[in-house]
Amino acid sequence: MYGYYRVAAAVNKTTVANPQKNTEEILALIHEAAIKEASVIVFPELSLTGYTASDLFLNQTLLAAQNEQLQNILNNIIDTDTVVILGIAHLEADRLYNCAAVLQKGKILGIIPKSYLPNKKEFYEKRQFVSGRDIVRTTTEILREEVFFGVDLLFTDSKEMTFGVEICEDLWAVTPPSCHMASNGANVLFNLSASNELIGKHEYREELVRTQSARCMASYVYASAGVGESTTDTVYGGHALIAEYGTTLIQNERFRTESHLVTADVDLERLRWLRINESSYSDGRRKKTRMVKLGALPRITQLQRKIDPTPFVPSAYADKKARCDEIVHIQAHGLIKRMEHAHIKKALIGISGGLDSTLALLSTCKAFEMMDWAHKNIIAVTMPGFGTTSRTKSNAVELCKALGVTLKEVDITALSMQEFNAIDHDPADLSVAYENVQARARTSILMNMANKEGGLVIGTGDLSEIALGWSTYNGDHMSMYALNSGIPKTLIKYVIEYYKSNAKIADIIDDILDTPISPELLPHSDDEIVQETESIVGPYELHDFFLYHFIKYGAKPSKIRFLALEAFDHKYDEETVTKWLKVFLKRFFTQQFKRSCIPDGPKVGTISLSPRADWKMPSDAEVQAWLDELDKP
Image (cartoon, rainbow, N blue to C red; front, side):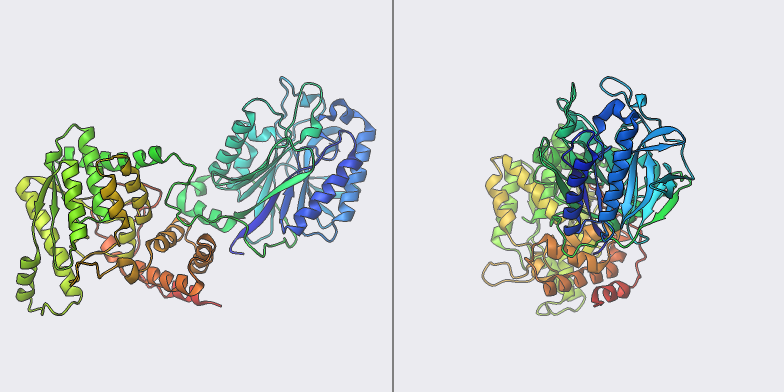
């Protein structure tokens, strides 16, 4: 399903040195994982025997009992497509190795030895085991079968999933084996662990797993030994968690006494294209590996993952003040650098009472405050035209007064009428020329006034408008510094809400946020906005969602539609999403010529449409292939 696979991290109830009891718990969890359509399930380190068996590993009886139960498990999963990763002790060439065994449909596909053995404080692994980090390109015999053996094994279904396995301490090493696995194509990394509990250790462990998933641009599935391993001076909590590209998708409640598992749906298609789009992944050194072919894997029939409907907006758990401060500081310092370099002391902003010009004004004020520059040198120009309502004009004026900036008003109706006359345009014809004359008149006024005042024209257009080409070429499309060009509409609302902490402007901001988005270029008769942008081009929350997935990792239109339906929980039906997605695609392709010559502006998030850096696209590319993909049955 669009590159999604369900993976599981299991913590079995452990009885140390009793493989038979452990097998009963393991088989129950495998069955549960199969019912839940998990493609792969990973168990803790030395899960058949228990990790803390210590010197009992040096006794023949324990290993014989382990292998007997390993055969029992194989016999019971002959008809199971789910891949099982178990921890076993394995004897090879008169050396004992701490290993992971990869099983599917009654077969052992490969055995991976642990590379880094802890031998300090409460851990004495080298007393029983030998490192296998140099074992490559070899096989071993187990249960009378010859199987692949070594740290050079990766497992693939030849579709989207390729996974590698490391064991506990391997992750804590300076150069974890998973780094090399990822460089060789592994997009899922599994870790069988026996990490004991200490104060705060679980937080560090989660951070380690999460950051490794980010560094490897992969999913990371971690399962650690449960409370049944607790003995002598060590206590185990059974930590299970799944992370993807720097985000923890799920983790369990530790210290549970019964067997349990957690599952998450990981997006491997996204990870593959993120590697291509976003990093120096392709420069990573590749080592020789052996690819082991998996049988058919279970595929999920219904997605069980929350898709964020506002991917540009920080999560609900983020510190809003810190995030907004960071965004505004990026904007402000970009503007400060430009003004200082150009030896300019004044800034000019066309202020409309809408979201974009409000944020541009607030961020410009922030820059002036940082530099202890007088607010009077911010010149806010309100330019009412045929469609301006008293509500938006009043909000613009009151905001400027509250902020203490210099306010000027230039009515553009007479100027626009002269332009209509010059180009022989009937003012009753409310076509694109009628609208664009006004937009270009405003830009002309701002540019000329900036020359007169020795100031810099601050562009107010945002990332969403740039994506859709929702601007007048050489009108609001142009400025001397495009302050909002890296911020999409959904994020602009988020940042403006943050400014409500300023009591002087809180009520004004509330009304600005409640005002329908409009260019206000068409005339009205009852002082009401008659031209609502979102009824023309579609909801900005949808377009921002489309933009994120289209740019971030090049998602196909059909997947974007699927994700939108999931993310918005069917707030929009499939017909509506398809309609606006087609509008997005058509406008995105046909409006590239505007993006090819936009002014400088600060990059704020991971997505930018600047032609000088992040997005290079021919202005005359055809959209048909994307529309065709969306229309496929």
